[in-house]
Length: 126
Length: 378
Image (cartoon, rainbow over all chains, first blue to last red; front, side):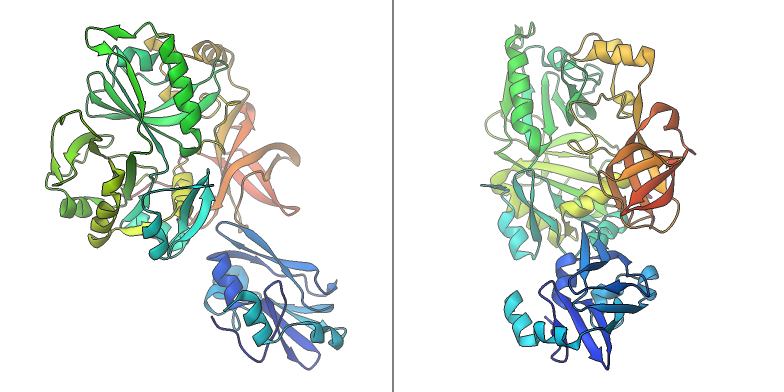
């Protein structure tokens, strides 16, 4: 199970990669494996202001729809357009091409409330 | 406490993801639903369907008795053949849909849905006691539930004949809905073995639309046949792909598309109702419906634009007005578009009718299409 050390993780299985005041968000390798074949992704609307733990996006496998929660508050600045034609990239490259949206982080202190790789690994028991 | 089929350990050791289905711990997928769906459409997959129920009906005038309880024409079914049929309540509603195999002149095997085994069997027993066909020269009418003694495997896909020939020592038949008895010890064909114990059958039936066969074997033989068929090239598949495969064929799923509140005519299953054969439970209600016309009809709906997977209970609209809810739905793996079944008001239940399906507040353009959604190549 791939759990990169340079990311922060939410209990709801999202990751965030921070670069300045922009965070890139996706779902973890564990989450994509649990969801199985992802056949549809609905990223958030650009420009939307969201609060930490809001359901902002949806990914759907053949069997089920799952909400994606933003790990931090802020403004959605970019959505991964490529997911529209190829949502399965979330399965094959969850930490890379399978990213879901980018957010301008409103309150960097919220990042401190997220888990590091070791804590997330412990959460999922891997 | 949920039930396990005799292949439970094979599923777990084979890496299947297990889920609860109708009180059974069943594999929903092995490698993935899309991969397994493709396997069945292009090569060959194998499903454990041991959760389904098996009843044996024989003796007396079994044929006449079953004709009084099922919609299709039992008397017209040849020995060695299978037919799809429906068991109705007094209101013409569907208790269960089943496959009936005629294994001898007055001997029938019924394969029923897992969730309905007890209810179906109780219904049959209740009607057996009041049957005027109890005895005749061939003896007493016997109705037995062998569900726990039988294991059932479905091998489905265009490569099924090759896999068949690796395991069995008799010739594959191109005839669909055909059933023969075989010797599970040798894999050889046999005719009407000694009546003692559970006999094994192989039938060219299935729930995917593809070429294939289903085998009925004693539970103790199931692991051996599972291993044999896997070694012969069949890939293990779970109930997830079984559902997308059947939906592409518009085969209804009892509990979702069929219910005691819906008749076969409403479900678009009129082809499996024989009004000419004489009386059967539910016939009067169906006859009245046939004369007056049905109010609603189970229809195939195809989404006309890129959309999320359609799921049961999504709202179906016509011109902005809610007209129905989906009973089944999926993103068709073979066609790449949203597909669904729904009971539409009769005037809308015509191919070409424009509709919308609502997903999370957004409406997607859809259209009623002719059944099935997909035509198999094999």
